[in-house]
Length: 600
Image (cartoon, rainbow, N blue to C red; front, top):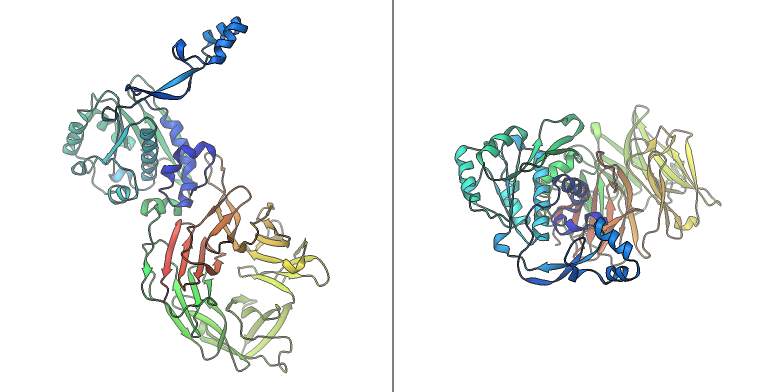
């Protein structure tokens, strides 16, 4: 369910048609459009009485509130003043609406002048008028100017919008014959009806003339207005003698606009009928390659890598498999169809598929590297960077020591950078967090730099940290963004620019990472800034929730308990494995799953 502020609750039913991130981003625009469109002009119901519907400022004396009569007895002057000023309250009588004589009509231009962002306003107008028709007991009839043969649509749901709205955009302008057919369809409209036309400002005048003398409410969307600033100029021209009014509408981020125009609904992603292999509860999933791919370790010792599509309808491509001769301890995604691995083979660490055709074999016995300790354990990421012009690998061992492995001319150096490392940020500027021995301090340091930040902990034994993709903020000389568990269920959220907040996730929930989502309550005319949030698995082990100090929402419930989940620090993706052996990758930008691998 979409969590909305009270001002947007009237549109909750309509906004639930959209994917959750889209609903959050478009809800303020819907409210702005409602103010611009104004109140309904459709006539009130004239049927039989049906009880009371509320309070009103006008009415007959028989429906005056008892409190008003009490004022007449105790304070006659105040009673007279309220009557003169129109402040008296009356019971409002509800009437049974005569649905056959009440309707709202909407015609949309699906031609070349409205391709792209203007169609986002068309969708909002559909949702708004659907709510208006519902509120006044009317029926919404909507159609496309270029498709008179389809007739009127009377439902605003996923099926009708997909078939008759999303797929209707084209390059054909409206013809005179099409306008004539729609004019004939509107000729029998009743007096208690409202007619709307949505088109560009270039076509609005000819369209209004074609429908003369029908009283049209015309809403025009200027597609060429200030596109560099991502804004649209929207104007509403009601029938005379009312005056026109206009407003500027800021567009959401381009990625969200594309998602609205492609598929804004909760559509099912493409389900891969073939299984990656024998997934088990102990399997692990990990985002690599800037969140564009996911890697899984299989029960038979293989690795498999899937591309993460940008939308549910995109092709996932063929998975890439990697079988090692030893125990795979770390993996990372490289370029196209490249899966790099670190394998432990009889005490020797081997790195394969390293860029530029380099291979690494590093002996890990005590004689050569007394501090380096690797054993069989679940899959972990490693970082391949170019430090000082040399290729190197950053990796944490089983004792939570951070090592840098560098090689040049066949020689390999193993340098221990820190001990007691909580986590390492796999970003462009490497940052790692270290627990101070014997102190309740977590120290965050930047690689190859003296810059550091110290945070006091309540309980070092409970310390956890998750970094975002913003490694180090040079403006404030501190780590850009991270979430730190200081103990006792208290998480400190540090954002770029010095923002600091505290969250307390629900008891018995599990924090799996941080991600960025649009911040709520943005000002009108501004892009919604993004906020750093926590992703947690709820106590039921089937629900993943996104937590912020001002709001939270949950992803669709998993079909089976979640055994492992991870968050992409480079994007807005969440991947999880269930106890049944199924993999799901959920995109917050798309608002729905974009990849599913069936259970074996």
